[in-house]
Amino acid sequence: MKYKLIILCAALAVSCQSIEHSSKPDKLIAEDRMVDIFYDLSLIEASKRLGNHDVDVKELDLNTFIYEKYDIDSAQLVQNTTYYSDNIPKFKSVFARVENRLKVLKTELDSLRSKENRKKDSLKRAAENVRKDSLTSSLEIAKKLNSKISNSEGRDRN
Image 1 (cartoon, one colour):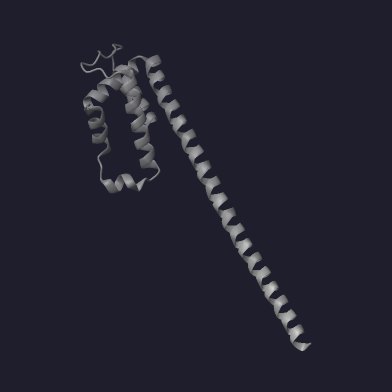
Image 2: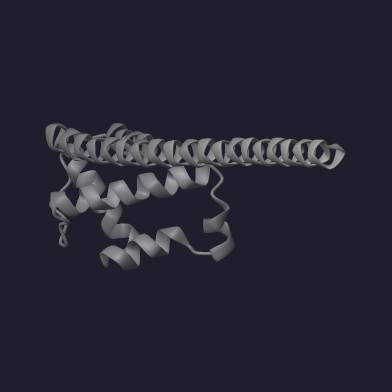
């Protein structure tokens, strides 16, 4: 998603014939809020690409969700994206922060997956140990029974 937005902004910048920068939007979205918006848009795009069917099932218009969540409209988002894209260092900073947040999220998810896998492995080993203990106990009981039976048969013969 971030690449689409960068390409969109680059296309907007290149398509302009004059070198004039866009004016400051009437409703300027703060840089921190732009990071949040681009972060959410990136997550939505990733969800679509990975085929997250939970999103489809809800029949949720994700663009509308973003607009409502941040109390903006599509025109405001485009104006602010264009405005920020005119200041390349600031625009790079916004996307670097989005990328960092995504990396932190990935690290957290990897950690959770690792913990989950360790838990599954531990439960699997415990189940195998219970099964082995059960078999061992059953064999020991059978041996004891056989021993008692043999001893009682020996006494009965005497």
